[in-house]
Image (tube, rainbow, N blue to C red; front, side, top):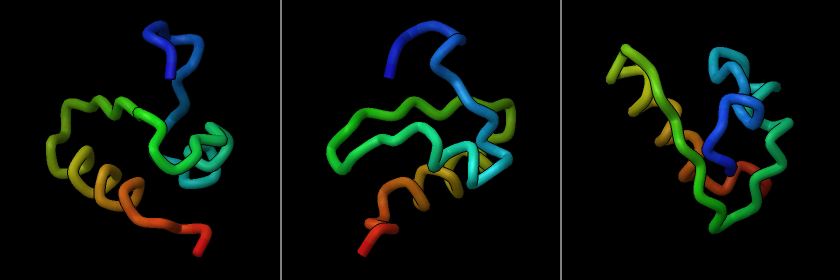
Amino acid sequence: MGGDDEDGVDAASSLMIMTLGAEKGAEVVVTSDNADAVEAIAALIEKDLDA
């Protein structure tokens, strides 16, 4: 995804994450002040949720 804030979405909403349209193999950057939240979101993104 792009390097500017215009490409970002609020990861607190799984629906917003899905709107990214990232396909398998795409690079997604997740940032937060809460490291546990970043790890949880990264784990979900790594799964093949469309299977």
